[in-house]
Length: 225
Image (tube, rainbow, N blue to C red; front, side):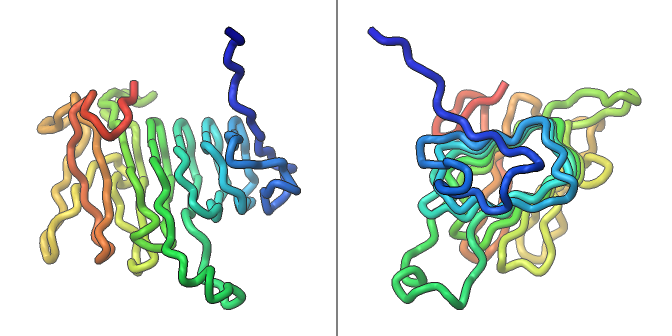
């Protein structure tokens, strides 16, 4: 039997073209887009092709727009700061009637691993939201302060005027409340948080975000180390 090779990868660097397509960057639905060890110098890149996977690691100061149609890939983000990810294309007056009639496809899985600082996730509509899995890791930072491994992590859909902050600048976790209710805030190191659980973030058609706990190993979502 022939050994299985690694999936083909296209690496994004600060010199990559702004629009990443099959013709400009060689991206196809078989490729993984790798954004590793990249300081984007506050640049923005637009992924116009469907890809198999997007991996963002140890990167900062960049915006990545995922416009690819039928994007059912996995997007992994870990060890990043000052990163903005936008899922789904902007409404364009140049879109044809057939394009406008096609329902938007959700992103397959967005997987967020610590440490992350000042990471913003935006969706063109609630329909673009797929599975969002977050794995808080109760620990201590370099200064000995308790942390979940996240700070300034926010989500926003086009229906929201302001983003929903899940982890604030102090690293406290905010569970969104029901309509008219205040969020439940859990600070790292205070207790009351089940470290054996992952968090699953979802968004209803009304644009409201919900956070639920997921036991490690539970089906339908990946288990993260």
